[in-house]
Image (cartoon, rainbow, N blue to C red; front, side, top):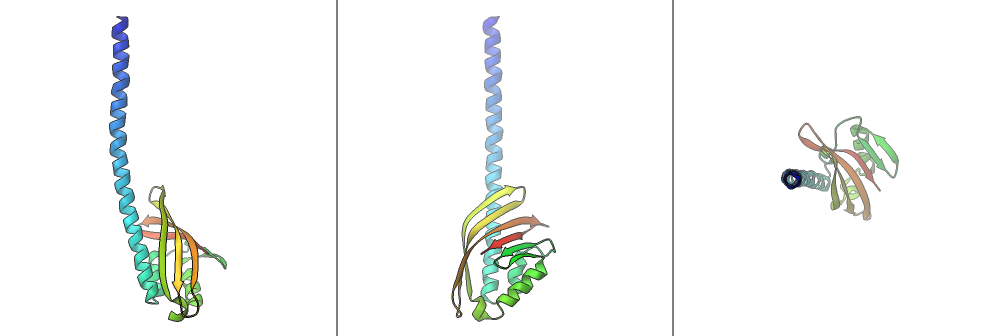
Amino acid sequence: MKYFSSFLLALLCFGCISIKADVNTESLEQRNTDFNSAEAEIRLVMEAQEIAWNNHDLEGFMDGYWKSDSLKFYGSNGLTKGWQNTLDNYKKGYPTKAESGTLNFVINDISKIEGDNYWVMGEYHLKREVGNADGVFIIIFKKINGEWKIVADMSC
């Protein structure tokens, strides 16, 4: 009886471990698929922003941002709240193609925060007639109504 109890306990323990490992493997594959899909879609948003910026289409560039008064942009001039205020600042700072130049993003990291929230860390490089400008950013993307939008941006 003693051996039977030990055998049964061992069988239960190993059986649970095996089942748990199978569940974790499947959910890990799903998480990787979800991450890869999110990363690809976020990169597409940022590529569309580069194209719009390089055509001096600031409204098109702003399509990547959440069109909300709750959008937050933190830059060298401090905190700006709201999509329209952010667009107005871009128009003021980059009134012509000479000031906006050609934008290139370098994405150094995309990481999931939780749920449908990701951060992107990277660099921006502007080649301009009035002098080049380079800096770094961290932006927060959130999936809103099926679309990836920037809900917070810190660029300097």
